[in-house]
Image (cartoon, rainbow, N blue to C red):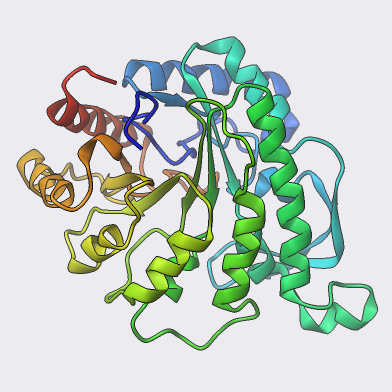
Length: 340
């Protein structure tokens, strides 16, 4: 898929928010100022995409949970450390999810706006409550996922129509289902997750440069079932796969080997969870190993994950985040020169 729209220097979308922006809903002016500063940062570090940093939301799920009816926030915390929400009814969109905010980004910069959304399969797997099935809630996680997929798909089409060219769906659970010894299935089986993600990611027409990406997890499993990985890539019609690539493990290479030739890949080559900077030669050696498997012209580079997928719990400080983003840019220039 080699062309000139690979968005070489990428990031997952969430950035460390300013210290004073504790609840972005309380002060729209402060939110706008913070987004402007984030855009300026991304331009300074030569990112080839620009996002709003995830600042408008409590966490990476917010673009959907804040704009869709049918969900209730509980007082509990899920196993992932996030506030637990449950689906009390099939969801309905009350308007655009992220398209209006993306339009504001286009007014601030000529860099391609990127939008990250939680995947419908992830939301279905984490919000379906069987106890509510008999009292108006969805009858199954699959039914919930399909309803969410239609909402997300409609949003993707709206975003593309408004000029957004890179959309990323985040599902931190999928890589855990590719292990050679899969864990016991949760409320959403692997086959159902693939079907739900496929409904959301499909696009009958793709304008030039459009990429629908999927981030299936933040770390590769210890071992990868090649057949399951090939099913994931084959059944979900994503153009771009955003894969962890910061550990130098055999499993990371196995994920890359299973990827079809006609798909782009964005390699998460620097660890977004630790302030220590990676050795350039070490990372370049990993990229070279990947380039022996996948055409480097169909690659991009990014940090391993978002820097603040939960706004109030950034993984690094702002200074460390900047150094990591600069390192990604430096690595990209080693790989492609100035051809971005």
